[in-house]
Length: 381
Image 1 (cartoon, one colour):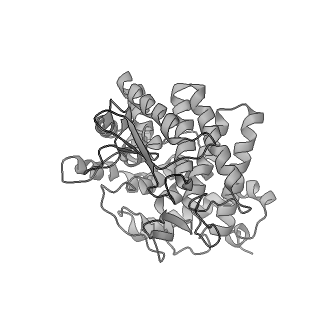
Image 2 (cartoon, one colour):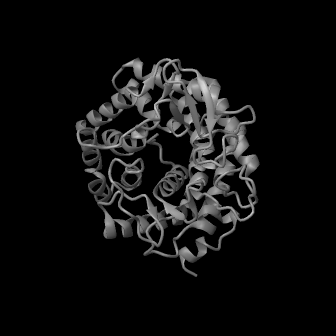
Image 3 (cartoon, one colour):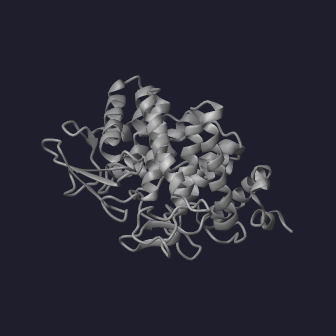
């Protein structure tokens, strides 16, 4: 039996001793992608070949983010060279016609900011600062929220921005400029008030009156409905609030992260991989979302870091069980020419788009999680 065949046949007791073998399999997959399509901006792989989205699309930072993690772990110049120009390419979207919006954190934290952290590149630092200014400019003072999209949705904010505000915290620290931190904390407090429900479930979109700042309503967005619990939104929230705690040290954010994580864990089925929405009308036959699983696993590892060992053990152990199932049941390590690491990701089920596919952000958070288990100490978010 080969090492890869053993990964697909291991039981949970073998998972921890197999982390190095899993990492070797990750490297092989990434090396195949570099050979086939190193300059792409991938988003979705339906048939084993990743597409090539425009650079202003919100996922453009995740492939270079994977490369930077591999570079940091190995110091192999191939990964650095392949990742190097992505922030320069995405930066052009600031001066050309584009649709950049609240997701610039997803685009510049895994490119320019980590590039600067690892190499000292001053252009990376400058681009990260430019992106932070752009994100801060989307802050609505009256409603204390970061505006989501462009066009006519000027009063909408979404849970995804819980992850993007790490860009503002980085800028506040790097440039000794607390205005970024104030905006990030104000938005985080709005998430606590209007997005995270008492039971720990999370809504995707909240609509505000952009003039008065008054709350209007919750919207389903990529979830089943206004009162549902879209699983990737749960992951954004638990990881995002853990990051806010990391940057601020304020316990309310860590407790919020735990509350959301507890809901996520309570709603999981026996195989530890969530359905696309925990409150879909009928779960039987509904698609899973491996991207929600990998993001939640990485977020739970972050939560565990900030708790006493005894309290954090729950989150670390559950994260490992999620990653074990992703590796054994949903990975493509036995299909080395298949671009994409995880199968059965769900992008937007209500719109019928990108269901049962590989998603680059699902792959990213899987790689990030395995790196964390191997002791990776830098962080992108």
